[in-house]
Structure formats: C-alpha cells, structure tokens
Image 1: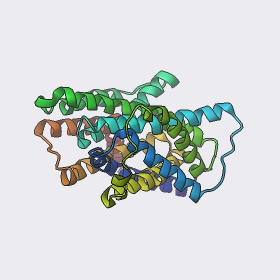
Image 2: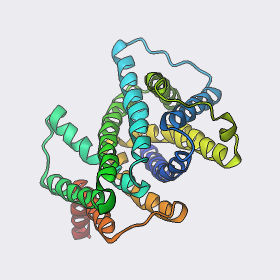
Image 3: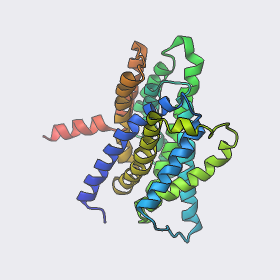
Image 4: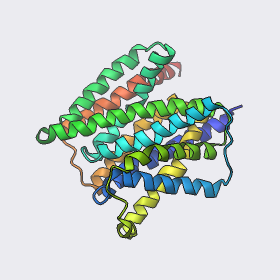
Length: 303
C-alpha cells in the first residue's frame, strides 16, 4: 500500500531526477566534441550498471516470460533508443532546443493512452498539443541559416519524447509487480546495453582511453554514469512506482528551464527572439495539456 509519505518521497524523487537530467544535455554536449555518441552512452551505462551491482549485489529472479519482455522493452526504449537518439540529436541542435522538445513527452503519454487504452482526450489536452506543435515549429525554424540541420535534431527530439513515453508507461506497469527498484533499474540497464552493442560495432571508437582519463572528461563521465544514470534512474523509477507516470512526467516541464539556464552559462548558446517565443509556447502547451491551469483555477475558486 502506497502511503502519503511514499507519495511525498515520490514527488521529491521526481524533482531531484529532473534537476539532474536537466544538466545532462550540457555534459553530453561537451563530451560530444571529443567522443562519438555510442561510446559515451555505453561507457556511462556500464559504469552505472556496475555501481548498482556494488550497491545491491543480489540477482533479480523473474519466472514470467511476459515480465521479462517488459524489462526488455524498458531497456530498449528508456536506455538504448532514448539516449542514442538524444545524444545524436545534440549533434544537430542546441541543448536548450532539445530540452524543450523532449519536455513534450507527457503529451505522447496521453496520445498513447488514447490509442492503446481508448482513454478520451480532453479539450485542454488537444488545445495544449497544438500550441506545443506551434512552439516546436518556432524553435526548429529559429535559425534560418541552419534550418535543415536544426530540423534533423528537433525531429530526433520528438522521437526521444515518444520512446520516453513508452518507457514511462512500461515502468509503471513493472512497478505494479513490487520488485526492488534498484534491481529493476539494473535489469533495464542490462537490456539497454545489450541492445546498444550491435550499434557500437558500426562506430570507430573506444580507443580514447587517454582522453577519458583527462580530469574534466572523467568528471563529466562519472557525473553522467553515477548521478544521471544509476542514482537518477533509481529515483525516477521509484517516483513512477509511487505517484505514477502521468504525475511524474509533469516534472519534465521544469527541465527546459534548467537546461536553458546552464546552456547559456556553460555552452554560451544564443537564445533568439523566435526561439524564446517557441519555448514559451511549448511550455504553455504542456501546462495546458496537463490541465494544470484548469486545476489551479478550480482550486482557487474553492478558496
């Protein structure tokens, strides 16, 4: 039984996770100047997987094929596809752009629920969705000199949002089985690494051992592996288990603000007027689609 204390911890875990993940775009963008995307992803997740083995040296026993397939799906979407697409997208678009677009993931959760579970889409959701699309349009075409390049990255960003929605719903289902969160996360990492290995064979890399030992690179790698992978995935999966995928994903709305701030400070990215309009529209869209404004007004009328 999930208590009020568990829900409070779940909300706190979601907030912490988004705070950390909001900065990962910056760290990854810096590392992409010296390393290929697959190299970064596999190394960080192998380290994260090893850390969880050290923390919880216990094997997760699953006797159901159906449950095992759910773990495989979570590893494919939440680890392999999500981070592969996200890292490649950062090669074509700004970190601030990508964070805004990825924050639309809750919209795709709603659309998937409509298609798969036949849940009715409410008017605020539909209105918010089209406002988001308008915002993404402004962001993608903000730089007229690199429209095609930015568009590739932004489309990959939408793909990230879609696969993350699949992962969130899958993990909420896995959470119903009552497995240990650390063991669950480690199993997801295992499948994610397995799915990424075939892709890694097509990349010439993994020969940058000396570069990885450079203090700044090593610090960023350990931050991505330990905090952004091992710890943050555990806290995120805990939040999905306690407060559900819909409520947990509402915290994604804060991620663009965090990423944009740090991208301006550390990456010196320029935010044009058109990009600013796009960001505002997208954020308004996701807030309306989540019915946060209607709920706020309803609560205010009660006071």
